[in-house]
Amino acid sequence: MFGVLRVISRIMKAELIKKLLKEIGEDPERQGLLDTPERCSEAWDFLTRGYRQNIADVINEAVFDVDANHMIIVRDIEIYSLCEHHMLPFFGRCHIGYIPNGKVLGVSKLARIADVFARRLQLQERLTNQIAETIMEALEPDGVGVVIEAQHLCMMMRGVEKQNSNMVTSAMLGSFRSHSPTRMEFLSLIGHESFR
Image (cartoon, rainbow, N blue to C red; front, side, top):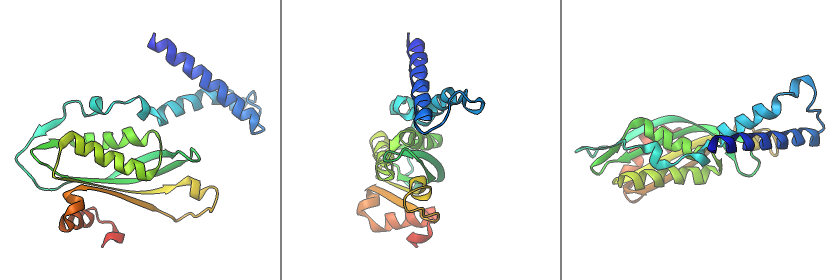
């Protein structure tokens, strides 16, 4: 039954895309656009797959007991998302750090958590917070820090058309917020020049 519903949904999306092509002045029957509605529908399914993913399934028991309480950082996780205001892409790098309190997460799960939230219509500010809060809930660490640096095509392709702008957002929870040396260590280790 679920497979049938997905097929119906994809057909309906393809029809919407065909209407959009007509609305912007294109001919969806011309050779180059014949398969565009179906391809675009598949692309949108992929780009918004985060709505159909569950954090518990993503983490999938990859929480491990440890004695260590040193800072763990994964830098330069690629992020691709869509801004909710114009549905245009924004993309960049995500840096995640935390100090365990008896539990660590499999390293690939940090990138997967970031992807679950990135693959939705987003604000960069919300995305940053969602990643940090999810890690805080899953591990109950001493602290969590998340920094995202991204370029937004809604600023580059339209509107102000600023090609070199880069938005930086951060979410600091627990000791990363309350303890300045911890925060500064994290910011130094991710190597972002504006934090030095």
